[in-house]
Amino acid sequence: MLGATRVETALRRPLPDAAELGGLLVLVAAAAVCVTGAAYRPAAFLLAVAVGAGALVFLLRTDLALLLVVAAAPLEGAFSSGPAGISVTSSPADLRSRASG
Image 1 (cartoon, rainbow, N blue to C red):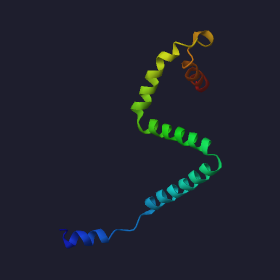
Image 2 (cartoon, rainbow, N blue to C red):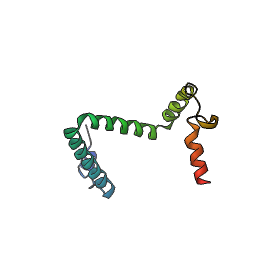
Image 3 (cartoon, rainbow, N blue to C red):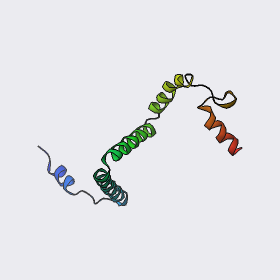
Image 4 (tube, rainbow, N blue to C red):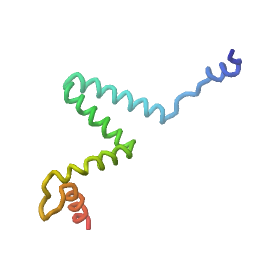
């Protein structure tokens, strides 16, 4: 049986702080966007949620993102090279480095 002090401690829960209230506000806003999106364009919203969930997983689990990059590397050889023999995946990185430098 629980002691009286544990029950009293559980009943005296502190009020949520500003960060908790902000998180709840964001959650309510996200729920409203979900309801609206699902009502107007269900297929597009489902695709957007799937893409967002995938991006969130890859942001939180960088090991999975790295696995995807490494697993996709053999596909690069299946496509012909871009201009001047530069590979298709190296081209954007090369252009970015030239633009910044």
